[in-house]
Each structure stands twice: as structure tokens, then as C-alpha cells.
Length: 349
Image 1 (cartoon, helix red, strand yellow):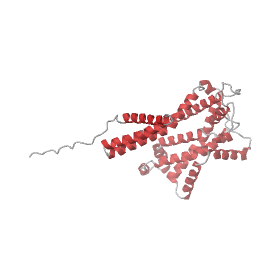
Image 2 (spheres, rainbow, N blue to C red):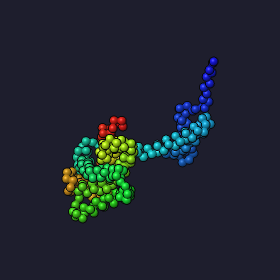
Image 3 (cartoon, rainbow, N blue to C red):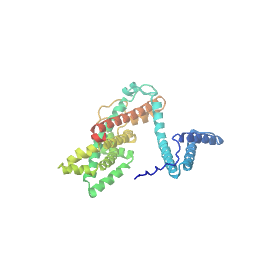
Image 4 (cartoon, rainbow, N blue to C red):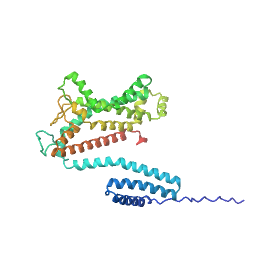
């Protein structure tokens, strides 16, 4: 008995070649340039905007004719998502381009290791060492306060929180998320004003103000990361007789350590560039103040603000200070990634 194998169906749907979007994009940009010449003259933004619209229309119609309706919808969605990504990327790239381009003119080792003692007017000397130390002090104090408080609050909300207390804390965290930074500065200033008087300025006041802004971000991000940990891991730990607190420490936190570290870094990046609360609480100084609990102290955001307001050669120091602040954030993110990679479970690395 002979068994006949049914014929394999041959795919008849035609597909556009992979390189098809490139000539379509080139033609769309050329048409957009011609349309711009008919008006008041071509501009870069106008050419790209009109070219994007023409590309989406031409590519979708071509795909509809050649590939069919399903592939046409897919290409249209891909085109829209790609253009949205490019539009979102433009401010970031332009910001980095401007800061790096203007900041490198004054950025140097001397800038990082000298302060503004004895620098007046439009003198080209002077650096931001005192502001870097102040930023580390203030941000470090805020982190010492906000990170443990935020993590413990998130653990309570996820693992223990039930009833009106948990709901009240959730509402409070939501309200604190929307607090303007100047309000946090006024709160810290008033708190220390009652205790120490109006003349008291110190890095600890700025740290408290930034901690008010940082805590809700830590709570929200850590809470979401803890909720992503599968309940099966908790139940397996309980089945082995491990108490709940040890399960949280050894299982839940270890599983979510990468996300927790990312959330903490987002919170630090959120407050490290704040200017308004620091203007009220720590003021400005021209030299290094190593005492975090007494005396005015300079910070990079306030340093940048003051230098840019003076103009001239001081504006170059402002751009270099902004570049320094970006580099500090990048360094902190690199350290956070190394920490999360080292402490993450082996399967998550």
C-alpha cells in the first residue's frame, strides 16, 4: 500500500524586501524638502516632520498593495512607534550635546580640585570642588534617611499592611509624590528654625528637605518590585519552616534586589539636581565646609545657578558644573548596576 504525502502549501504572500524602507524614506525627505522650498524655505524640523508623514503614508499604502492589510497595519504601527522613540530621544540628545559641548570648555582637573575662595568678578580661575563635596554631603544625608525608611515602608505595605493604616500610608505616599520641591525646603527650614533659630544653615537641613522628596519615590519603586516577586517563592520558603522575616530578607529582597537598586538610583537622580530647597536651607559658600551640621555649604545645583546668573566667564563654570553633575549621576548608576549584579540571584544575572 502506497501512502501519498500531501503537497506542502506554497506561500503566495509577497513581502517587501528588507531594504524597502530606506529608499521610501529618502524619497519622502526629498519630497518634503521640495514642499518646504515652495513655502518660506526649508527648515530641518519642517523637512523631518513632513517627511515622516509622507513616509508613513507611502510605506503603509505600498505594504497594503504588495503584502496585504495585515502587514500594512504592522508596518504602520512600527513606523509610529519608531517616530515616537525618535521624538522622545531628541530632547535627551540635544541636552547632552549642549551640556557636553559647553561644559568641556571649562571642565578640567583643576576645576574639580579647586574652589571659589578669592575668586571675584569675571576671573577665569576657580572650580567646583566645594560644591561637589556639598552635593555628596547633602545627597548622602538624604539617602541615609530616605532609603531605609522607604524600603521598610514598602516591605510593610506589601508583606504586612492590611486595613486602614496601610491605606492611610498609601494615600500619604501618593500625596508626598506630588509635593513641590520648594514646599519640602520650607518644611525643613521651618523645622530647624523652631529648634535652632533663623540663622542656622547646615547640610543636614538640605538633606532632610531632599529626603522628603526622595522617600515617596523609593517607597513606590520598591513596592512595585516586591509585588513582582512570585508568591510561590514565599510559599516554598514557608513550607521549609523559614520564618516570615527571614523569608523577606533572604528570598524576597534578594530576588528583587536589581529592581530595588534601580528604584533607589532613580530616587537619588530625582533629588540630586534640586535647587529650590537647597537655596532656602544650605545657602551658598565659596570654600569647602567639611562640617555637615554647621555652616553654609555649596552644592552643585546652587553653584550652577549662581554662576550662570553672573554670566561671562562664570557661565563657563556653570556649564562645567552641570557636566560634573551628569557625570556623578552616571557614576552612581554604574555603581548601582555593579551592586545589583553582584547581589542578584545567579539565575537573574
